[in-house]
Length: 313
Image (tube, rainbow, N blue to C red):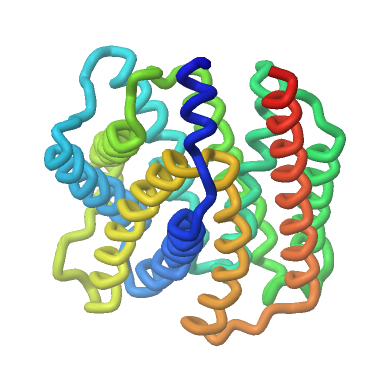
């Protein structure tokens, strides 16, 4: 029996994995209200992204040091860190920070979790995925949900938000390209902890000159204690979500960890109501339902394919 197959057999979905899955979803979803609170309290977008990448990377580097497993610095590893940092943190997190004061955090959350479906679409031309009608149907369901956000005049609180929704759609595109890049290029001997640490630090090195040129640094103490607290929370959230994701993948596999998308969407609605007393239109609720159906269809399709492959081998 190959090492890959034996590792796959050892991955089981137990109570601990389920608890960690819910924890990871709730933690990740908190990043979106933190983005908005930071922005509304005068934290500049570029300075904010620099802090969450640098701070999160430093916390994970400490974890690497404690485990005796520091990121490698050979050429292929460095390329992985910098390209991965650009696609998974620097570009998308900057977009999210810019959009945060202009859109409800629940809407942003829904848009971001499109990334698994877009990853499937982008994986087809490079043969990382097989064509599956059910996954295509799931993608169309999710895109129908996006149209429900964009087209009806009563869906968003203001018509000026449509442009910000379109801009925010670039975020899951960037995440999807990151997923494809990691599948195709990431060094096979790199552990999840090393990869996450290197990616966060690579993003911080990208953001440092950009922030310096723009004069967008954020220094503590800032304009308000709420802004400072939001930045510190975002640093912890960013490091913790990467760490939890890698633990869950190791325990139960990548398909299981993708279920965090459902928790993120539902928690996003809860945080919107809790932190901002947001009242969402029926169109947004319908869009969320279509998105969840799309995610479920894609996950079921992928699970069924993998079960069929394991039976045939």
